[in-house]
Length: 307
Image (cartoon, rainbow, N blue to C red):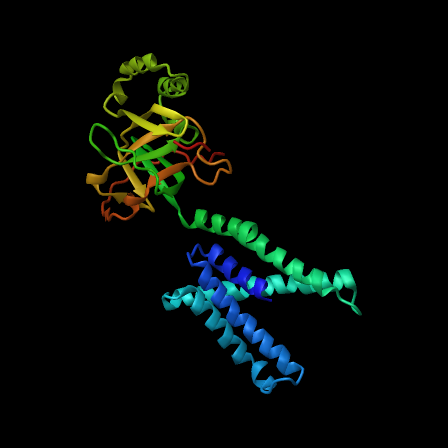
């Protein structure tokens, strides 16, 4: 029982990404184990208060004590989440354990040892795989925002992800940089610009000189240096859009970002096509009646590669 309680508290902490000391996990588990021992002794008439110990509010009180001892301090909303996850994981693992015990041993002689093992295994799976994947998917959804890039008469609608690791700056004006995969915007770029972006993968910097022939785009084009794992002194070609809308609101002009074009997809599952610096989301937006003429098309691609 102690191992089960310990793993249950550990799984709750792991799923919610809460740091707690092993000693507090031990203390919280000890409370649950002591309660279980008292309950068992009372059920055998070796101790009084059997009715009190099996009283549902008492069970809730013990669970609350375990959570408080393990995770305090916390705010009330976090306490509700802790209790919810604690019971959710507990019910799931206990249910799996009981089902396994009866399936293995039969209705007349359930195999409770195997049931306990299955319960523990269920907790580990939920903590490390099941809820981890669900949590990751939820976080991905939460941090996705609609993005629109306005170029001339075109309005390009993209799915973007808030990226706390994107700290790129345009070296000319120190404006923030939004990274967009090439496939999502290629239809709206000059053919020569698309070819040059692809050629940079082969470190053919000499082809950048050819961009001088793009008269209408000369003032837009930017070169953005970057470093990443396995790639030092890299270079992205970017451009200055007419406007950028995040969640249907135009950014303030003093935050007018540069768009960097990445030659590869940004997400293997195609869930987003652009990476937006987190601090752009924390800024206020500019109220304006600026509108681009319709003419661009939404391009949803399959996507992944980090800058």
